[in-house]
Length: 296
Image (cartoon, rainbow, N blue to C red; front, side):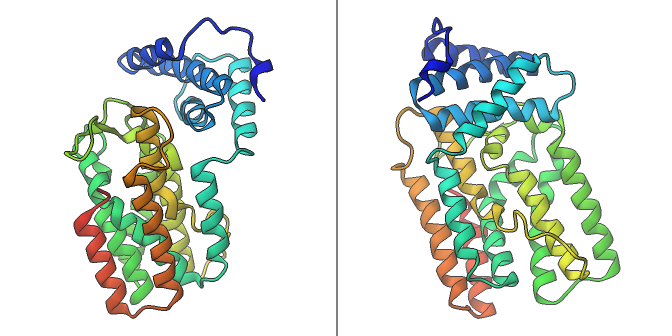
């Protein structure tokens, strides 16, 4: 459907992938160009998942990195292509729609716990990224988990509210920093053939949805009026991170990859557990399991 949009077909996918690897050792300007060109090439090929992956990376750089050397035409194309791809059957969007529909059967606390379960699975990975330079804020992810759980179960005092707002501001500043997008900020895991990039978490906009999640919890506790928009987006944050990693490092369809299937099952099983109104003991047991086992 997109073939007629392209005139320049001189670069092969293989060459453009090499350009991406080289660009990631250079600077954000080279990265934008490489992601933009590769995203267009995948779009032409009909590989919508990888097209969205690389075009979204290009788009996020223009949104957060100052003085990106990109023309208005390039930025408009990136935005237009992403808009068109949002109408396609993509894994992340499909699961997000399922989560949003199921959330209509849950109350506020149940939705909060659904988000929180995902954060528990991501905890070890995010904390490990905190060892990278200028990523130290991620070592406070355990504090985020403890904060939300305490809000939901017993409440927090004024000092804790102040600390929560400070943590939220620090997360916001970090998600808009160069360190967050630097491809050199990685972790190596024995379960993965290649390092996981912190940039992979943008596959579900994990950091922004985490901020929205925590902000919702604070405002709800303070009985401050808040929007229900994006209330359960963080539920799919771990899936989006896995999706980005596998789209970046493997060829072919990623939906049959065991880790992807496992995370989809986690999301669905968490919903069933919460829908059936578990005891506090069951909730704490599930959180402990996820925090100990992690994403992998």
